[in-house]
Length: 164
Image 1 (cartoon, helix red, strand yellow):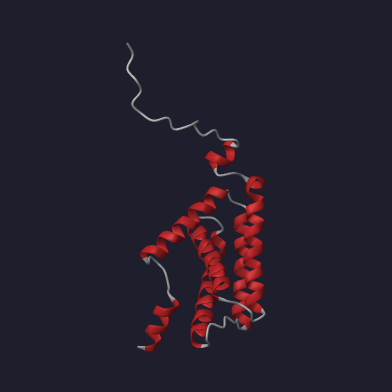
Image 2 (tube, rainbow, N blue to C red):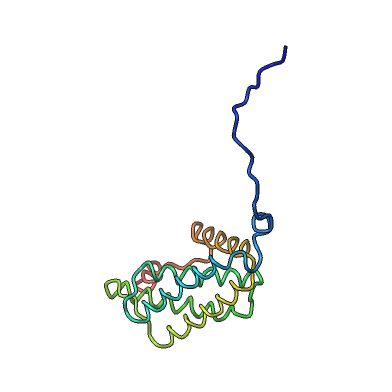
């Protein structure tokens, strides 16, 4: 007499439809739709902010793109763009400080807009030349740094430093 199974049936096992995308993170054209969506969101946020209609959500989108671009530079992806990303980060910090003083109005000055626009162009170049898994790794690293406050700059903390 055979013994009855002790474990519960879990259903069918996962079958990868696109092995390259699943295990190697995708190459070139497999993540092009997601890439275009991200680029459109980032550039629409920049457009809204440059026209004076920016809000916190759009500010956060641009800051996130710059942070991911900066981490990708540190990981060796487009390392030549590092200085551009740092100047854009500083510009966004100034925009954030001004917004805190001006009732959440996120507005660029001319040099800040140029720095951020240039960094988004560099970030687009980075995104077009990497695998999707590299972008995911950079995004996870940004989240980890923000969560643990590693190399992160807060607008409120910077304003508190200036006030002290």
